[in-house]
Image: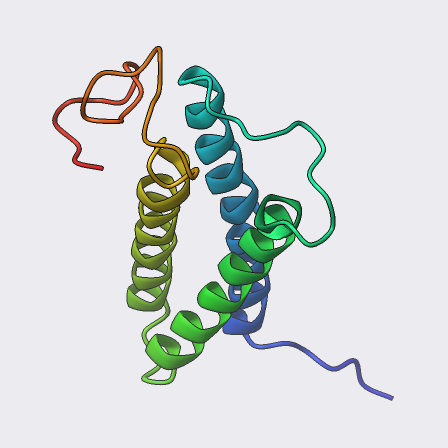
Length: 131
């Protein structure tokens, strides 16, 4: 019997799915640290019906699914390098959207943040990068 060889794209695709899942964890950590920096974290242990309880698994799943979809669509043309770049751009965009949507005090469900400026963006976020 001969050993079956995988195409080069299969290994890269699997690696990008893992990167997508790790990007989901990273975006969740970024949003959580922004909420904590502004002291607007709702509760440390939310109940199972709360959005915060499902935020980490949904972030991991969204990152992995986005990486798979973008790599499959962009890699269909046979250009692996372009597919990798497109996947990384989409993962950065998803992280940015999650920070802006769920990491700021307005996204956390409160309009008042005692330690954040009036823009509702944590002080450690770079000024040149809009949120």
